[in-house]
Image (cartoon, rainbow, N blue to C red; front, top):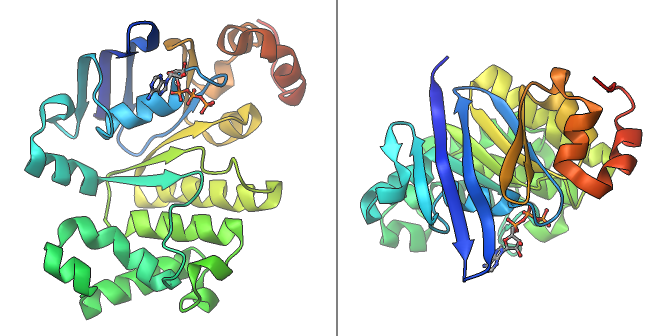
Length: 262
Ligand SMILES: Nc1ncnc2c1ncn2[C@@H]1O[C@H](COP(=O)(O)OP(=O)(O)OP(=O)(O)O)[C@@H](O)[C@H]1O
């Protein structure tokens, strides 16, 4: 396997005092399913936002698909963003548009401004959208307005919108934080399936340690902006969870009863 994403010694400073990321270093292989876990304020969202250049890291180097992310100019930045599909906690759908229109919106980045404004999509694009919605179990909702869907259905539309870009990687920022456990399971199963059967790399921020351990090939544990665990979920120990979560760890260790102290 080759590394699709390399994060080398990346730091992010907000203002004078807030060091959100400190010398963060890890790589993600093509097709891997990687979860980033850590307590609130650890730097998980900041890290994802640096990877797709929603914000600029203060120092270090990020390489994605052989592109030097931190030095990209406008046109190449657009290319980067078509290769990285984003999934958000609050879905970020356009409520008044239908499921298929929201899905097709994922292709806006590849269109001219005029075609985008007029909502001009080819028959091929529409067929691709239908196929993706079918895979995600949304056949019967294709023409419904987004605001008529449940949270779990909305998140599946969010995934469809990301997939239509034909991305190399999905970046998912707390994709199940607003969902009930059964909807959350459906979303995680789809994300895992996307990684396994489509070969698309998945990098996901999660609050739920048990879910991260169950679905991931690799866990990146962050505490106070630093990577304190980088490895297989199979090898993670009670001490590792304590290092990642500090004082919050006791409750979580109870949650992940399957792990044992080293
Ligand atoms: N725009 C900003 N300006 C100043 N400080 C910020 C900004 N964004 C984030 N921070 C700080 O950076 C640190 C990391 O925040 P971040 O949102 O990345 O954490 P997180 O691990 O995603 O937290 P959560 O799980 O609660 O979403 C926090 O101390 C936060 O207050």
